[in-house]
Length: 84
Image (cartoon, rainbow, N blue to C red; front, side, top):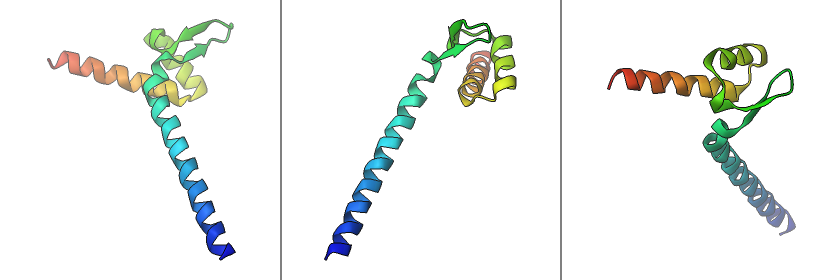
């Protein structure tokens, strides 16, 4: 009986961990534009407020996924505006 109970407990812990991780990912998806980028000279700027050139250069040097997401979002926003 102990083995079955331990297996059950392990499955519960795994499910709780997965749910917690899923929530963190969902939250990150909604807030990435408000994240702050620290420039090499120490200034802090919201990712959404970075100009395109700065955004692209920062991404080229860092390969940071948040910067990539912002670039993709901007590209699609511009395409949608052009087609409407």
